[in-house]
Image 1: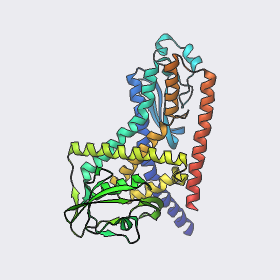
Image 2: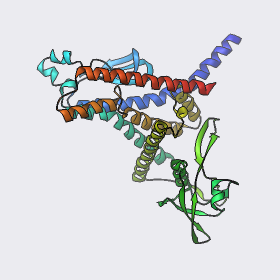
Image 3: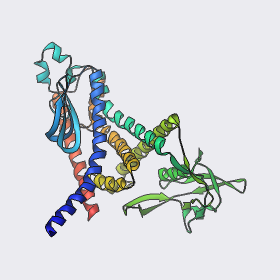
Image 4: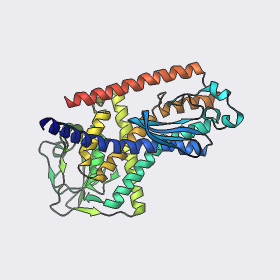
Amino acid sequence: MEIGSIAAGLWDHGLIYVVPFLFVLTIIVFFHELGHFLIGRLCGIKALTFSVGFGPEIAGFTDRRGTRWKLAAIPLGGYVKFLGDENAASVPDRGAVEAMSETDRRQAFPAVSVGRRAATVAAGPIANFVLSIVIFSAVVFVNGRVVGDPVVSAVEPNSPAATAGFEPGDRVVSADGEAIDYFSDLQRHVAAAGENPISFEVERGGNPVRLTVTPRMETRKDEFGNSFTTPIVGLRADNSNGSFRLERLGPLQSIGYGVSQTWFVAKETVGFIGQVVTGRQSADQIGGPIRIAQVSSQVSTIGLGALLNLAALLSISIGILNLLPIPMLDGGHLLFYAFEAVRGRPLSERVQELGFRIGLALVTMLMIFAFWNDISGQV
């Protein structure tokens, strides 16, 4: 009886983590590969396999054009294998292409123009950004968003804002010349500033006041107990004056919100990567599948909308990651195609093979590092 209870507990605990993780990752991978597939088909390239996951096939079917759609056992990615690809990484099999009939060669990925290949490869990351826009737009259209006026209700003692001279009742008009309409705009601007000084224009008693605040980096915990480092200035807002309200957006407003949210997250993600490379940010915030599963599980307790928003955030990250100029990733393929366009001919097979080996080593090291961060964060 006790063993059965333990087994049931482990099963339930596993489902809590696995189901939200698979839900989020499957959406992201499917749309990424769908971008490759649709643009490839539009460019006249034949797709042999569309796989969500790697390894042995669990389930699948073959469509009327001969493409095998399948769900594989290892749900940590996916791929579209086109005619003429040697493997799932789209390494060209030039020997096989040369042996093809003229009809097949016209549909082989390595044989089409460099522009068509580049468009097909770029379509995957672009699909990730489009997915994020769609999710952000749909969630805010259905649920609306809670907004609050940028009025300060309290200033934390000994905070950068207190040092700069902020007072309760101040209304923030702009930050570094950017208009602040809601308190969330203020929070986003501070988050993006890091430790750089921010020039605020404040309305106090009907008079304009200019204040300069340098945020301070602090380690805090979210509602689930996860630690994160973020810039703070020490301004608070509450609903004591009824400044917070639910705002409903129309279809066009929702799309605009989705575009701006996707752009903001993408810009901040690129900035974070740059800061990690230059040593201004710690790389311990980079997580892998374990951390994604943990966060997915936690966010799923809030609701479907929150889980979809997490999928949108991760979709942006995966889109940007795939655009890095590393062979094995989409960005590496695009780099090779850029060289090909300039030279008028592809790079030699030896150079490409060396590039793919280096790319494989870099991607493997990144995966190991992410797993290490996941494991060490659980200890």
